[in-house]
Structure formats: C-alpha cells, structure tokens
Length: 365
Image 1: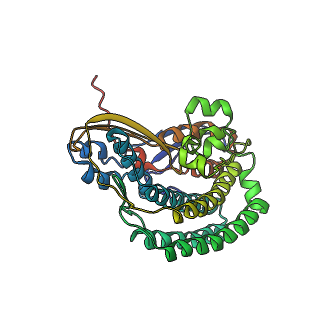
Image 2: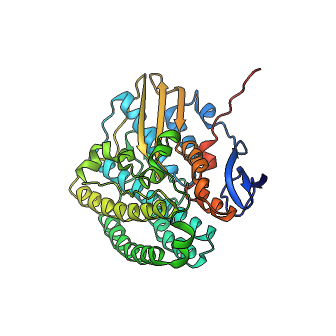
Image 3: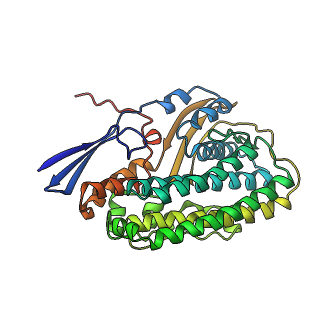
C-alpha cells in the first residue's frame, strides 16, 4: 500500500484541502479527506447582528454562489416574518439566481476539462462565462458579491432595454454552449477520461446523501429542490438527469442545466414584463424560527434561523452541499484506474471548501 497526498495546495484544487490517496500499485483503493484549512466562523459572526447587516456577511460564505446565500437568507427571514415579496422581485431574483447557476456550471466544467488536459474546451468555456459576468454587472452593478437580494425584494429594478439585452446575450451564449457541448460529447479524449470513471450508483448516493448534479447524474431527478418551488412550476421547469453516474454524466447534466436555465430566464423575463408596481416592500421583521431550502448550483442549501422582533439574529445554521458531495468521492475512486483519474473524479464533485468550512467542532476527551 502506498499513500499519495494531494494538496492542500495543488493545481487541480481551487481551494486548500488535503486528499490522501491509498494505492495498490497505481490504482486508488481508498481515500482520506482532510479538511480544516479555511475556517472563518461565519455563522458565529452573524449571531447578534441585525438581518440587514447579516445578509452581507452570508454573501461571503461562497464567492461562486454568493447570490444563492443572500436569496435563501432573505427568503428565510421573509418566511418567518410573513413578508410577501412583490411579483417583480420574484422574477428578478430568479433571473440572477439562474444566471449564477450558468456561470457556476461553466466554471465547474471548465475546471474538469483543464484537469483532463483538454485546455481548448476549458478555455473556451471560460470565455463563454465572461458575458454572464457582464450581465451580473449590468443588472446588479457587481460581478461577484452582488448584494442584489434584500429582505422584502431586490435592491434595484431593470429597464425594458436591459431585459432585451439579457435575451440577446443569452441567445448568443446558448449557441456557443451547444457547440461546446457537442465537442465535449464527441471528443475521444473526453470519452476515454470520463466514461465509466468515477461511477457513483444509487446506493452510494443514499449512503452519502450527495446532492445536486452529482445525484441527478446517478438517476435522482427528484433531488432538485426547484421542483418544489411554486415559481418554477409556473415556468414549467423540468430537471435534467442521467443514469450512468460517471464523470461524463455529471458534466453532461451541468451542460443540460445551463440550457434549461437559459429557458427559465427568458420565460421569467416574459412574465416580468407583465408585472407592475414595486420591486421591494418595506419589511417589518418579526420574532420567530424557521428554515428554508433552495437548490444551489452544487445542490441543496439549508438555512435555519431564529430572530427577535426587529431583526436581531439569535441563532443561524447554514448547511451547504459540499460536505455530502465530498463523501461521495470516497466511492468514486473505486472506478478510477489511476491517480490522474482520481483527481479528475474529485473535480466533478465541483468542490467548494470555503462554503463547507464554516464551523469548528471541539471534542473534549
């Protein structure tokens, strides 16, 4: 038996984490995942702060899905306080929410292509991502931490011209995505490095509670929380899923979800044009406890909160999808012939260490 450490600093890892691969010859047979390099204590920092201040802190849980966290935080406070959000805000939230899914998936697939040494596809995907970032800047004024969601709605409205521009750019992006998806699907290199590698079956999903595109690539379309949301039912949303459960399937699910997100955004903008009135209401925050779940780009995000009258946070618990998805990697390596394949399988989990490491547990012996 040989042990090979990957990380905490490694070219294939976006953030610091240590993976100890246990090999028999060249084949990985087991893995130990060592976390704890990025503790920031965000949940503790938020306690005792007003909701209007805390929403800017939870936005820093993750840079890639910063909007999802403010979206879910605001919805949790609104649910507790029984605040009804205007129709305009509902559709604008969805537009930015799905744009963020597109940019996250493009980054995830690009990282995978670079991990298997297909630099052409990797850089092509990053190039397509830039117009999405430009749309964020046009809609919200920012590209990463957008501060778009507020309790009671959104921070700003968009014009009719901006709505038209979003649709024009999405049509152009859709054409590029379809071309890249076709190249990915037919590439001999991608097939050799992806099909039948990193396989995760239905039973393993049940053991690890993996979520998001990982679960849907293994035959669990019902894992998508958007199926349970009223606004997505109105827009005719259908989850994207596959059965193979390998590296190839996980990336193809992300490609298909990008195309589905484009459809949802265009339809939401059609409904938005018919809306009138405000994009934000004055929010009276009331005491109570509650929780809410949303489908982030990597899977289910859960917020549990207890707040006082006036909006001071007594307790908050944030559960992100990365910890469960890390666990699934332990089963993926069983169908990885080499160390290089183990690294690429790990990349298909779309790991986010920053969003996973929010708390520290002290065990007294």
